[in-house]
Each structure stands twice: as structure tokens, then as C-alpha cells.
Image 1 (cartoon, rainbow, N blue to C red):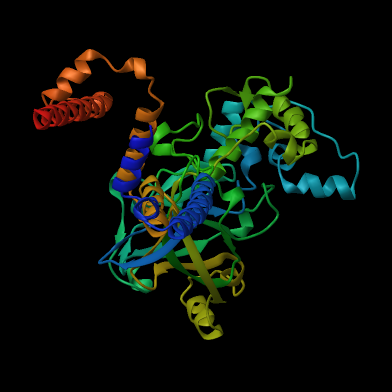
Image 2: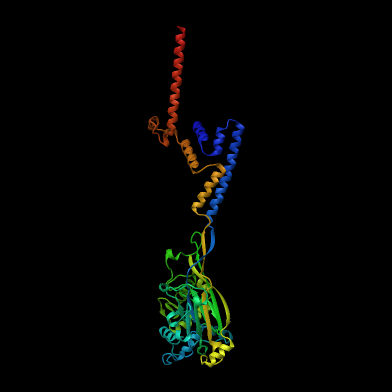
Length: 494
């Protein structure tokens, strides 16, 4: 063992041990051993720190921007704050005497009225089914031609019915531009001439009970095929205003487990059953609908006609009681069992909105004389100009990446070993080889190891046989020398 230790100390590539083994002075050897011990302790401390940092799975966020020739334009959904026209009680020949109360009971009006006039209660009488309520909603909602009289795209005048498609949302019938992924629109110019421009007539004379009490429109920018969900986002524009919405497109790429809690939709697929494209908002809306459908006996196996799903549509009596349950429920109750993760890869459209008056007094009077506005106040109370465009063809990227990956941690450990001990990974192999050969029992040395060593074909586990053979040869030489000395002495006597 002493010889193996001497051989390792004198031949190892670990600089401190090598220096200590080859030192001829005892003090010099002690100094090198002390330095080697201190460097080893420091190396272990730094390696532990590096591994601890790696196991914390920290991330680095990088923000970059790329100037492009054209940018994908967002889908634009426009919803009138009024859900149905006030003539809806005439639906189906006035068979449904209380149809006007359907939208009263399911909107903000009743919530406020309950506060001001407690005990308003619900209505009774001949009530429609879910399918009949949905048909009446479509019949007495604003059409594209009524609500969107003028549209331009990329500076060219286009029929609004060619640009927009009808979309059913939780706010009623809305209209979506660029909603199909296979017909994606792109913008190649900046400014309002390179985007979408729409004149909207909200038709306040037709306003009725609705989900909200405001007048105007709700605008949502989103990805094609993604549910707009106007009740959970977007911006509002009041009548009598001209709104400029400057858009910045940002792509975000985040890391999933173990670095973060985002959902890799591309890898796992869409977990939602009611919406075709996963988003955090769609997940929360689905949680609410699932809660209403399955968590109480009133809404069991039926859904509101404004929400998608495989269940049957609730009739009015079921909706009346179910909605009362929903109003009394808190957000925490239907979100406690819901885990909505943000998707790892998202596209976000940030808007910077500025407003001005819809028209000057001179233009109001001009259009009034031309018969476009029936009354002086009609334009101020009903018309909205909406412009959505890019002010630069720059796309922003926000990317998360690991602060340490496996290659960096190996590089750090290798660099630390080189700095503190002048060693490498092969030096670790040398140390392991020394320990294995030292701890191996002598009984493990077989005769075959000796013969192989004599033939020069010994393997690593039989390297000890080489030392045994050398020792035997040395002893034979010693004995031979002793015999020769004895012969010479005998010859001298004679």
C-alpha cells in the first residue's frame, strides 16, 4: 500500500498532491499539504454553492425586438354593450309574455335594483326554453350591416360583412375580424392606413336590459380561434368618440416544470372542453360554467344559452334559480377547485389608446344637412370611430431561459477544479482508481493476473501483480548476488 501511495502521489495530475509528494524537505511538504487541504475545502464549498443554485431552478428573462417586413394582425372582436333590441318581447308573436324579463334577471340592472328596491323578485308566466331564448337572441341582436356601416382595411374600403363574422359570447352577439387562423391577415404598413378602421353605430334607441348598464362598445384584441371573452378583458369606447388603438405585439415564451408553473399546451394538448384554444381566461370561464353545471342541484346538467358546452340548454325557470345561485356565490367558491395555469407560449397585444371627439361641430352640421344624421344629437349619442393599427413593424420577444443548465454546471465544476487544484475530471478518475486498488483485498489477486503482467497484457484490476513480479525479480537478483559473492570469497581462499 505504501508503494501504491508513493506512486499515486508522485504521478497524479492534482498539482498540490504532486508537489507534496515530490518535496524533499519536510516543511515544504507540510506547506503543500496544508495548501492542498485549504483549496480542497474551498472547492467543495464552491461546488455545493453551484449545485444549490442549479437546484433552485432560477430563470433569466431576456427581452428583444425584431423589425419585420409585416406583422400578423390580431383578431378584433367588437361587442355592443346592449345585448338585444327592445323589440325582443315581440319574438315568436308575443307568445312569451315575460321574455323582456329574461335579460333583466341576468344583467346588472336587477343587481342594482335589488339594492334600491329589495324584494323585486322574479317573474312568472309562460316561459321560453333555452333553444327559444337563443333563437330570439339571434333574431333581435344587431346585425353587421346595422352596427358597422363603414369599414376599411389597409386603407381600402371593404364591405363590413366581408371582414367581420358573427360570434356568440357571454355578452351576446359580437362581430369578429380576422378570427380564422387559416385566413390570417397581416399588416405591412404603419399608421391607420395600414390597419383596421371601423365606424360603429350602437343604435341607442334600441337599447334594452343587458348584461351591463353602460352605452358604447367593448373591443377585445386576441389571437384567431381564441375565445374573445369580452367580460374578462378588452377596452370600452363611449359613443361620440374617436378612438385610436396603437398595438404592440409581444411573444412570450416561459419555462414549465421545474422552472415555472406554466402549461405547455403544445406538448400536453388543450385541456379545455368548452373552448377550442387554451388561455388562462378561457380556463377560468370554463371553471365557472363547470361549477354552475355540476356543483348544485339547480343547474344540474344544463347550461346558460350564452356559454358553450355539451350540456342541454337550461329553460327559463332553471336559469332563474341557477342565476340566483350564481349571484350569491363568490369567486373563491367556483375558483377554489380550479387550477388555471398560464400557457408557456403566448402572444399578447398591448394597446395604447387615445381619444378625441367623433366629429367637429362643422362636420356634424354638414352631415346633418346631407341627411346622414336624422337629428343633431344622433351622431354624438350613437357613432364611434375605431382605428386599430401598428405604429411600427417591431415585434417584441420575452423569453425565459434557465440561469444554469447541466452544461453550465459541469463547466463551472470543471473550472473550479482547475482553479483550486489544477485538476480535471480525469484527475477524479485517477483518485478513484487509487482508492479501488488500495481497498481491493490481496486475495483478489489471481495467478492469471501475474502471468498476464509478465506477458505485458495486465488489465487495470491486475496492476498489483506487476509490483509482485518486480519484487520477486528483485529478491532473485539479491540472492544471485549473494551467491556470487560467496563464490568469489571461496576462490580467494584457495
